[in-house]
Image (cartoon, rainbow, N blue to C red; front, side, top):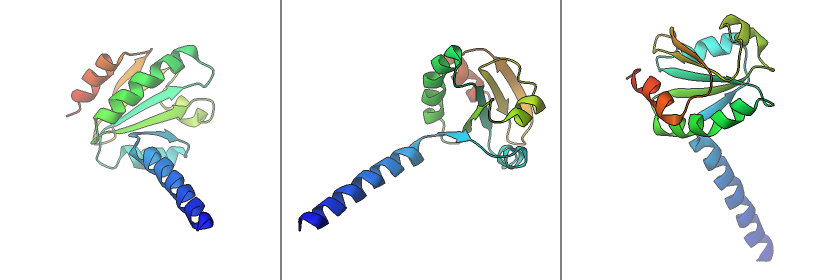
Length: 130
């Protein structure tokens, strides 16, 4: 009985962790340029944050970005580590961090913003997509 109870507890913990991860509207992008193109071309608006892990401004921007991402279920929010994806960084002319790029439903870049934004500023950019 104790073994079954422990198995159920472990299963519950795993399920809770997985559900929490899947419920997050913002996803870390670790794919290729080709897979990025597929994401921005799938008919939904996309908001991309380019960041560096050791960037203090990027760390400050993480909370407002996630907060706004959680508010808009019809928009894809991605975080791209510039150190790990230099091809995308180069393709979109990212030269400072954090940089936020907004793509419309056709995958066309409609806005690029190079600095920290508060939640209200980002929210306004996202609302213009709708």
